[in-house]
Length: 466
Image (cartoon, rainbow, N blue to C red; front, side):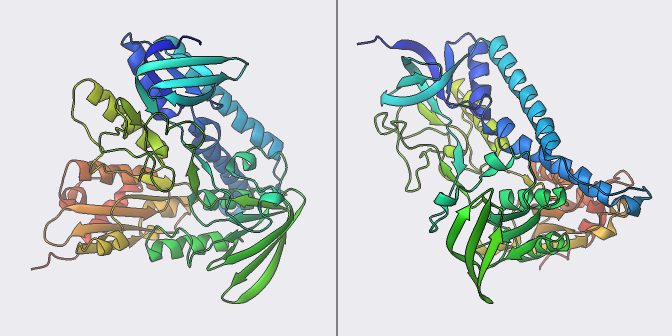
């Protein structure tokens, strides 16, 4: 029997949090290895966050070029070279991979390309990508395997070979009619991008509104500006079956409150959610428990049900699926390994949906406040009231603040409008500092910027309840 190779730390999965942890531990002189099946640096720089935003920006440029006459630019007919779009995206990805490999080299962390499977607690059998096997054991192990796009159980859908975000970002051709399953964040970002590239796009959402995690006014605003761009959006829609093959011709039998219909398109994209990559990797042999959906059970220190084993990132139970959360997981584990007592409890996590205009939020929504029985004061300001938006000619959306009813704490902030992700960072900073909203209200903010809109927004906060 092969004698296991011994490490101090083993990390299964090379995503953001796991990578930073490996570089940190190896930099301290600990023998550390990362086992990665396919994506050097994880999914974010390869197939998810960064490539998506890269192509979204290409779509924005196409959109602005077509709209040039509104800005005084004289343009002719505009078309999209999807091969060039893909090439630009690939060049960025290649650059990110190179930076990741440099970090491994600089830290002396070992990157092992292959598929890992636990055969016992803290012991991994790795089937190497270039052939052969290795057996590794460690004092401490970390599960950082991420998630993948789900394909819903619809008759004929799997046979139609639908795209996920991975295949959509690799297209070197323009779909004539793209049918998007799912009105969540991924589906909406890609729907708008392909519409701007020149595709006809239909979004099918099972729920009664798109962006269903948001307040109804947010969903309505997003529905409005996407529909204005020519995207067909079907809500409260049930798919009975799918026929044909994506990339050639697909037919989707769909029912809505208005009746049944057969949609015909050329391509179909599944964007209905994510599932964890935890099956088939021997977690039961390692004593690492999963919840009913297959996510790794962790406590607030990210420790699993097994000793000396931690979870990192979106494969963990009840974890927001964002790269910036995975990075904070690294910081939690790093500090605790050094004797600290850092937890994931009460983290204030912002996020941004990169539609155009973008949506950004931090803290509570009105729906969440109501569900938790928290009374709030709500202030709302149309984006058009912010003078910077008028200079840009981008006036869709609004800013909304939730203030505690009996004191001046900021409990939540939502914005749909230009540079929303940057404005939300200013509000988040105030929330982290536990500043009353009046500090932001009375601050001297640069003119003309989108952040300047915080002053009139917060000046409209209703008076405290008695």
